[in-house]
Amino acid sequence: MIKVPALDILWAALPEARVVGGAVRDTLAGKPLSDIDLASPLSPDDVMARLTTARLKSIPTGLAHGTVTALIEGQHFEITTLRRDIETDGRHAVVAFTDDWQEDAARRDFTINAMSMDRAGTLYDYFGGAADLQAGVVRFVGDAKTRIAEDYLRILRFFRFFARYAVGAPDAAAVAAIEELRDGVLLLSAERVWSEIKRILAAHSPLAALQLMQTTGVLERVLPEGFDIPRLAALIGRDAPVDVLLRAAALLNGDIETIAARLKLSNEEAEILQSWQIPNALPPTASDADLRRALADTEAPTLIARSWMSGNWPELRTRLATTPRPVFPLQGRDLTRLGIPQGPRIGKILAAVRRWWLDGGCAASHEDCRAQALLIVVK
Image (cartoon, rainbow, N blue to C red; front, side, top):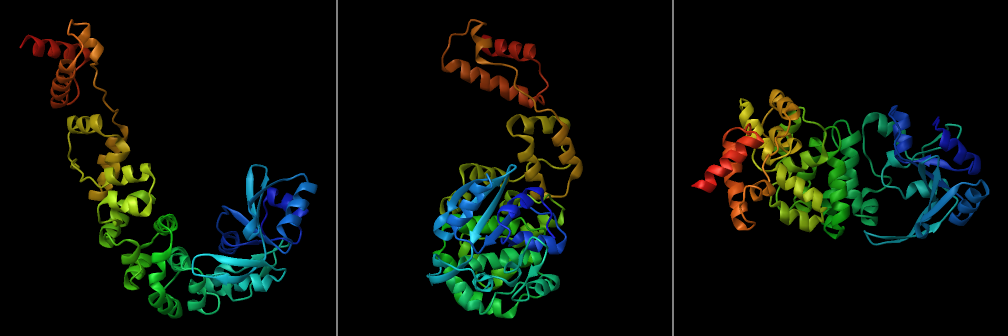
């Protein structure tokens, strides 16, 4: 049984609704719940009317596909009307609403994603999802080729679910269907592909899924610029934190600018990946002065990420995290106070003093740097 106070409030307004998707799987697996999605045999208009009557806030987030979002005590609950597919083209579906729970479950991708649970905790499992979850099997509902042809995103979703839930060998029918229909991933939007890649990398151990993606020919289609699974395996083997971008930096083996443009990464993601892929220049035996010099030019999180890419050096990372970042103590106004007129010369003097400051391990004080600037002026 799923016990969440805000969910009990929602169930009071929609007693016939059931929890579906990840919350059911997590409940069965004894894992903490994150997002809680529900399905209902009521139409979207009826769902919103019920919520309004109960004085609950509703948001029409996807009425064309039957989805309404309820906001209760700061939590969002997506409620989707039961559906059946009228027409699919591998990317989009035309749906009609239904009140048949099994018909709705039959259009879902995997057996472990086709279960539902009601307010009393009763599990509705039409296709053996609970047994598959316990056995660590990711299996399509019905015919694998049919499910994939309805929506090619299901190819990538298979590997995401495989990375998180699978134990042992993959389902043979699923693998055969993916190999036959793998070119379908080329029709997917860049945003959806990148989103699924990140979700795969977020799994505790994504290596088996990525190796299966390579074997089936999917990985080269979504990452044509290249990939390096052994480098990612080495990173994970060092017990590096489960950081999606850190893992992406290890996996991606091509020009980040090109990859970022094709997959439509955010500017922040692209900048982080480019920065983290720069070879680490700090050995584990780096001196305190070396650390200060490195920190003067680059923030500690970036240096720590680069060190993870190079080796398992916990002491170096601890030192980087605890060493205060030095700040160059001289500014342009300090030079104008010395009588140096504003202009390009000030920038050149500052650059020269900063090089001297770096060479000295970033230990020189403001007065020391000021004196050095005077020496340069005199020369």
